[in-house]
Picture (cartoon, rainbow, N blue to C red):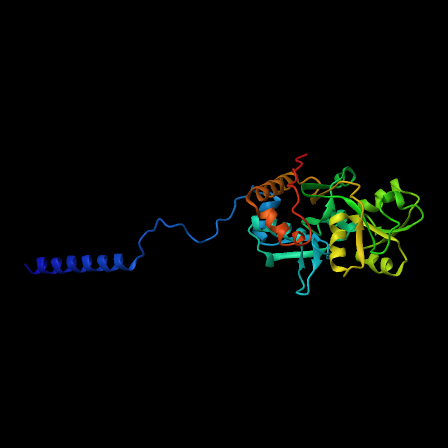
Length: 290
């Protein structure tokens, strides 16, 4: 009887402990978790390496209003910058973990080839010559070469008016190459950055600045009425995202990201919050999966 008494007490205690334990544990829930779901990337891919590192290095312009301009806060802003942030976000990398590197026209290919940057988003025209040394995702925007002059200049209205004029552009750029090849009667003046052309235009050292229409539109918007863009664009400049030459997997993945952003509205929102404050909404480009 004594043994039965102790056995009964032990069983009761066990039941009580089990009840307490069950009450303390949270009940299972069918509600979705707030924790981010990380994308899975192929082992050994650039995407996997960047996602694991939690950071990415992006080359962009620091001197181009609307597309890539260094802000007073010390971080660049503009449409190109937003495209870079969007790609980083798809890798699980937040904006604070992006290292921005100033990339001018002449050093875009060398920076990609040397690995100084992971990608370049810098008003970077896709063309066959550049495809020999780097690869491109995109295009994510289609621009065109144009001309900018002083507001009171009524003599230059198109590239046919450039003979005998001083035309300012940038080393390593497609606009400069186009002027040199197709308008040799113009005197081409080259600098390292387009902002270097602005003061010479103001003081008459050069007669015209040429680059893509959207870049010039940014300078006009900030000029307080000093400058104007004349004529119509006279080339096609599809902007792409530069990556390493043989990294087809990464290039195709970025193309997937771009196409998804076209469909879900992120691309248009990025435009309207940056370049779209001055320029009209563009047509959605068609990605070239060469």
